[in-house]
Length: 220
Image (cartoon, rainbow, N blue to C red; front, side):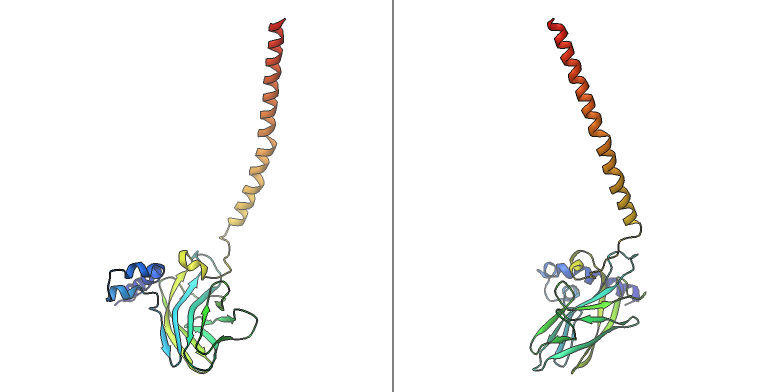
């Protein structure tokens, strides 16, 4: 498969992430169904399994800002392990933070940890490189205290639709958006407040006065 076709297939599979259950209905266990299963970016080494791995970028391709790595980490062993680092090929190492407090991200024995999303541990790429773009499949390596390196190819998707709740928490405003919003907020209310109500009130008063005068004259 050519590079362009491979990237297209990966992008299609990533977009289908949120509707995988619908795609599987009535399709059977064939290659077409497997292409859209949400756990296709998964691998395991020893006691560790990494599942649903994604690199999620800014929703606007022109925006500059951090990207995040989202995944679910399972530890099937009897000993807790720490996630020491996550590196993206050609793009450096992510900054890791536990869900609460400080220190390392720990995957408990017989348990799991979710990376990405509100209230979960996080893995942030402060300045993603040019290779981290929608449709690519980046090599991501998770390094654990006991198991060592666990690598796979993770889809790159924008923080849109289903992926928005797992994407970067810092979303820069589009260039020029702030200035435009400020100008609109400043001019529109002033025009309405200073002109329209006063004119209507004056017109109504004049009409009422003229009507009353005409009635009085007719009565006399």
